[in-house]
Length: 248
Image (cartoon, rainbow, N blue to C red; front, side):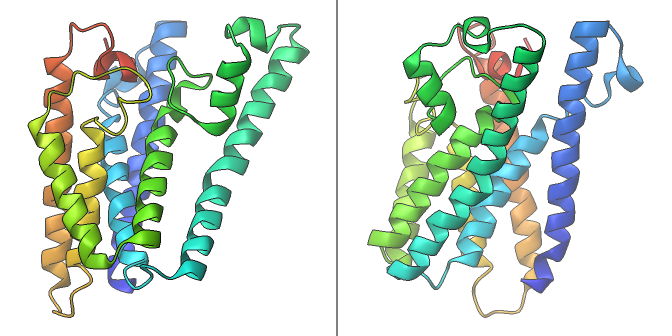
C-alpha cells in the first residue's frame, strides 16, 4: 500500500474541491457573491474521483479476504463506524441548531416517520436533509454490494460479476431516476466498479506500479466524462444529475 500513498493526497485534494464547490454555491445563492470568479464551481468532479477511489481502495485492501467470515464481519463494522456515527453527529447538531432558533426540524423538512427512518439509515431518497450527503447513499450501496461479494463469492467470481454489471450499466438508459432504483442503475456505479477493477490490476505481482497509477487516473477521467455527458443529456428532465448536484 505504500506505493499508493500519493493517491491519498489526491483524495484530499478531491475532498477539498468538493467542499469549495459547495461553498461557492452557498455564497452565490445566499450572498450573491462569486468566490474567485466561481473557479471552484467545477469542484463537484471531485465526487467522481472519490467514487473511483473507494472502489480502488476497497478491492486493493480486501483482495485476500473473500469468503473469510471474520474479515467480512470486520469489514462491515469498519464501514459502519466510518459512515454512521459522524453522519448522525451532524444530523444531531443540525437538529439542535433548529431547536435553538425556535424551528421544528420535522416541519421544516416536511418529515414523516418514513422520511426520518430513511434519513437515519441513509436509505435513498430525495430531497435529503443534508444536501451534500447524497453521495453517502451511493457509498453505502457499494459497501453492501462489495461486502456481499466478500461473503459469498470468490475473487474471480466477483471480478466476473463486476464486469457483467459494467456491461449492464453501459447498455441501459440512465433515465431511471426513481428512488431507490436510481442508485444501482446510475452511471455513478460505473465509477466504483472501474475503481475496483483498477484495484484488482494493482494487486498483481508484476512491479509496474506507475502503469497502475496511470490506469487509475485514466479510469477516473473516463468516469468523469461519462458522468458529465449523462448530466448534460438529462439537463431538461424532471430529476437530473445537474438538479441532483444543484447545478441547474
